[in-house]
Each structure stands twice: as structure tokens, then as C-alpha cells.
Length: 489
Image (cartoon, rainbow, N blue to C red; front, side):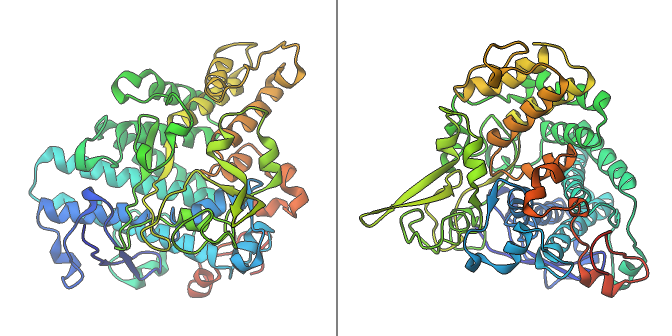
């Protein structure tokens, strides 16, 4: 594997994007010394350009750190137990983050850099003389990735600049204000529909990890669910389920079999961000990030334990007795020397790093269990049916976890789901423990309108459902970029 950095002009005031290749299908040649407008001439050039879009997924503003900080720590799943883990993270955890807090600027910049890379592919590929099928596939992959970036941005910040063409110089960025979220969602849906129509069912060999038809279909289902468009979410998610013979998605026999380096890109995984250790800048940080500060080598053998994502007591208590998922998700103690230290920590991403922050662990963005639970939720929103199909999919997930099924008239009140409102809470609970520490909890609470109710005790107010726009973006373009309500201007 090479560690090659490509520099691209970026959009929306973000000036530069530096990224490195990831795993086999992301190997690419250096282009930083070449004029970008003259570089894209061959199929290999476009393969390299597309690789830079995938590389954007591994940056700090995306799945390297921002998405789990926002997805779990902002919610009630994880917390900062040691202030030495970082003041900005503490601010996120306590709803004290401001427009100047780095999470906003890092997340904004990382996503727009990846979007610019996608726009480069989509603009430049048209003129390249290459196999028509490959051109269509590369285009579809770029559209899927751009849609994923915008889906993250619109859920985090609300209205955001919608840039769907390559930015050639920084001055162009000044013409972009914040587009209404409805316009952003419309573009996301268009990109995903077009991607789904073209992408293959699966990849093999060195291409494993690329976006597939199932990934586009599942993400589109999640978009419709987020928009509360149940009439569209139900058939879209059912399409993923009905196409299981083609997609080959399945619930793995054991929950433990979903996670760990040996189980990456398994049949339950629909799309995951690829990482590879080896001191080449391609490794993932999660093993080190999630180990308790002060644990020495008891939890992670190489590198520093950073304590940046610690399961809360409430998360620990969310698991039912005998839930098989807990042991594969978190632990309550570790042994240091001759002492047992009581401290929660995540084990889903344990591994042996090659160096500090340099592990093989991938990050799963979409998996089949998520689809089944989304489908059950959408069915219930259309109409509650006692012990109907929604219960079937909910209990399919519970069955693997070793738990008894929930029913509409169960004698055990803890297993009774008697109406639509109760089913909503049952799905919320099941998603929390099934998808724990995978970056979903915050977005679930916001999507269902439950965030303020659940998080009020931590200081959440209504305006916190959106993160503040980076102050740097407002300072650079005050005429068009305005702050979200509730944050200082």
C-alpha cells in the first residue's frame, strides 16, 4: 500500500483537501504536482479521483472521529469521564459547544472537502474516453458518496450550502449561502436514486468496500424515514429485504460475528468505511480512542488509551438481563496489574494497533439489522398492527440477542407492546442496544423528536438539535452564512 496525498481545490471557502489511499481499491497515483484541470484524461485518472472521495470518509471530520462523537457522545450512550480527554469533547458532551468549538469546523470542512472531490469526479468524467459501463459505475459511486456527505451535513447543521459542481477557485465559494434543508434532501434523493439504478449488487476481491446497489437503497430508505415519509420508506426498505437473495444480506448467526477485524465486510454489513493499519496513515483510531485513560496496556496493548468515548451508566443499564449483545459491545471493568478497575469501556472496536491510533478496525455505516429495525419502525408509523409484521422484524433482532419476543398482550409487562406509542419506544430501545456505539443514537433521538425529552437532564435545549455553524464560515462570508437559532452570532 502506498501513502500518497492528493491536493484538490475545495469548495465553499474550504481551500485544500489532503487525503490518503485506503485499502486495495483506493491505491492511486500522485497528482499533487499536476494541474487538476488537465489531469483527468484516462480511466485510471478517474479511478484515482474517485479514490480521493472514499479517502474523505476516513478524515477527522467524518468517520475517523466526528461521526461517533456526534452520534453517541452527544446523546446518552457515551460520555467523557476524564476532562483530560479534551475540552472540546467535554463541551459536546455537556451541550456547551459554541460556533468556535472545533467539532463544527472540522465536521463542516471534512464533509465539504469530500463533496468537492465527488464533484470533481462527476464533472471531469464526462469528457474521459473510457468504458461506458465503468464510467456509469464511477459516476454512481460518486453520487452515493456525495449523498452520504449531504445526509450527514443536513442532519447535523440543518440548512447547508448545496454545491453540486466543481469549485475552481476560492472566490466561487462566496456565492453560496445556506440552502433550505428540503432542497438538500431533494438532491440527496436524486443522487441515491440514480446511484441505486447503476451500482452493482456486490463487489469482490480488491473492490470490496465500494458502494453497492444495496447501500444506495438502504441509505435512501433511511433518508425517507428521517423525513417521516412512511409511504416511501416502507417500500424502499422492503426492497432491500426482498432483494436479500441478490444482495446476499443476512443477520449473522451471532452478534459477536458482526464485529472485529476478522469479520469485516460480512454479509450483515451493507456499507462500511475501510481502514488498514500499518503506519501509513490509513489506520483507524477507535481502539485507542475508546480505551479508558489510565488503563495502560490492560485494554489496548499499543498506543495511548484516550478515554474519548466511554459508555454511560444509563447505557449499561439499557441492556436487558442476558442480552448477548452487551459482552460484544462494552465491559464494566478491566484488570490492571493485580487490581480490578471498575470502568465502562467499548469493546466493539478492540484490536492490536500497529502504532498509536493505527488499527485495522473498519466503521460500519449501514448494516442489515439497521434496515430491519427501520422497516419495523416505518410499518408501525403507517399503522400499528398487534403482533403484525413490525413485531416479526423487531423480534428477529431480539431473537439473535437471546431475548424473549415482545408481543401486544404479553403477560410480562416489560415485554408488552400494546399500542403504536409503545412500539415506538420499543424500537427506540432496540435500536439503542443493537446499534450501540455505531453512531446512530443521536440521530435517532432527533429524528423521532425525542432528543430534548431524553437529554434534558444533561442540559439540552430545543436549539441543540442542530449544531452551530462554524464561526469561521460566518466570518468569511457573513452576507450569506448565518448562524443557527440559539447560538451566539
